[in-house]
Length: 337
Ligand code: NAP
Ligand code: G4F
View 1 (spheres, protein in one colour):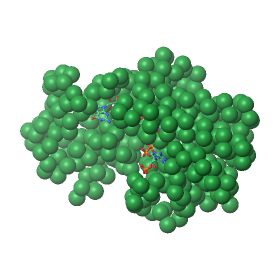
View 2 (spheres, protein in one colour):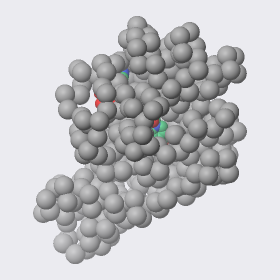
View 3 (tube, helix red, strand yellow):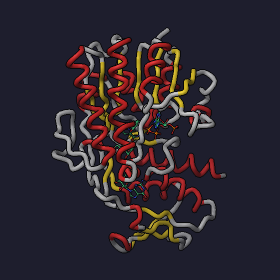
View 4 (cartoon, helix red, strand yellow):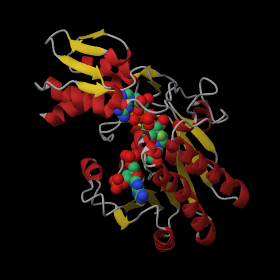
């Protein structure tokens, strides 16, 4: 039986990956922060919280990382933990650099010292492309991060490549474009939209307040993406791969798809900070822009080229944006009930 360790097992991807690995017969271990996570909500929702082995873990503690690696003797190490909210990274730039950047070398250097045969996965991100230098973005596109989060992730990405090239470690980076699900954190725009619309559909009267409606993202379903992570670690050679759908959508269009899934018929009016959406059927205001949610620097267009992952890993996204919006909106509508 193979053993895997997942940092960030309580997060969206961590929970889906734990389920996938359990289904594949792995012994699954994961790191949890006692201070912030009294319950394992996502693991409970997926019905796996009793099947995983949880260990007190924080990416900022080098000796804690050392003991986990020494004691668990894992075959595969998935580093999914992060300060993952881009918006907060301007408020917490130093902390974000430590957790999303420096922690990666803490793990890699410990693995190199005591378990170099362990296969390592780093959660890199399309946010590293930032002010995009070509369209679509692939593994060879020049990086131009636009947030302290993106900058920290660039360090994690390059140090992973460097340990692979310097020490021959099986260390891979997945450059993942946005992936969402009913387990997505409530602060991210897709879930914020589907939670807000579900409350409105149940009779609520608070419009969803959003920032930049023109930003475009390449959104896929998280469950597909954790399968891609696992496939990367099953290759003979470690490498870097883009996982994406190849389709990009504005925040406005995602909002429209989610609203339609809940039976709304939107009328859009105004522009920029005066933009609003009203449901023609009820006359209710369902969206208004609030400048508070604008970012100091924006990533306007992300669209990934997943052809390498398709060719070498046999990986392909299986859920399109309309079905993703519908899945999330209906899940939040049912949960609200
Ligand atoms: P998420 O839901 O926000 O989960 C983040 C996880 O990291 C949580 O389990 C959190 O623990 C843990 N964590 C945060 N700080 C930590 C620390 N100091 N020590 C130990 N654990 C810590 O994120 P996600 O969406 O699953 O994303 C997984 C990874 O992929 C992240 O690295 C993210 O940056 C990256 N990524 C995500 C996407 C995406 O679209 N989802 C795209 C590209 C890359 P608590 O539960 O205690 O808070
Ligand atoms: O949902 P978001 O917060 O996701 P973002 O910034 O793309 O980051 C996510 O994807 C990255 C991969 O590219 C991951 F690395 C990262 O960990 C995270 O999972 O924002 C998406 C877009 C932005 O352009 C933002 O300005 O939505 C825009 N937006 C508009 N109004 C909003 C809002 N975002 C949020 N969170 N809240 C709003 O009210």
